[in-house]
Image (cartoon, rainbow, N blue to C red; front, side, top):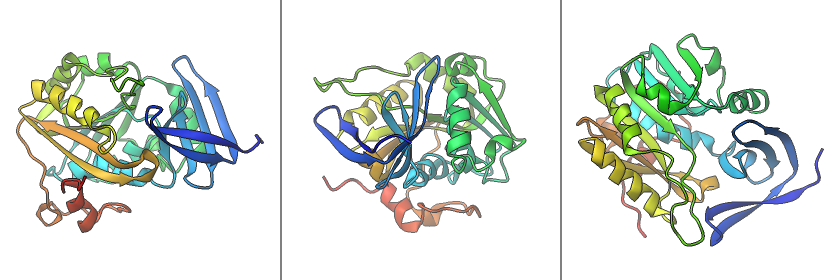
Length: 278
């Protein structure tokens, strides 16, 4: 067992962060692509980090995953096919598998190590979804997979890492490109939706602005919403796009789906489309 230490969770480069006590390191795995850490904290529960960056915490991962997956899913009429880009922890799969209408799910994840480490040390994230016969895991480069997508999808979920900020306030890297999203557009059904996380809306609004601009160059319709995810520093943003479909902004306008939800409710759903008061 490792000695207690402190973890700094960056919210905005070196300008803003959270100081979190780490009681122990549960796992550290070095893969071909990245360093995977899982640690236990009294504040956020068990945390998954990739290359030192927080990906999720057991305290509030359900808020992130339900907002990312269920908000677009509840806007689709009996979706049957889905593609997950990244998401090796299994949280997105768990949410997708709640819907009986879905018949086929592809996941393109480049790092088998993320899948294996999370299934061993955070099995509640996937909750058995990797064993679901509808799920087809492809350990591969998502860029190449989407270019040759074997299906048309009703929902494409890009569960990507943040575009991290350098100290000068610029974006350090652009993980996706217009060409990649053009391939996603070709793989998306006419009435489908694509969604991606868009970082902290309050402290890093440029992330959503950049993603929305990129989506806008590829898709006819672009929208956004937000959720409260404390381990991400508060307001976590999401950006979606489509061939023309728009997200309903009121819970009462949604199709009814009998799926278990912890974060989403009539209040938090309507709140997702309410402009931030800052």
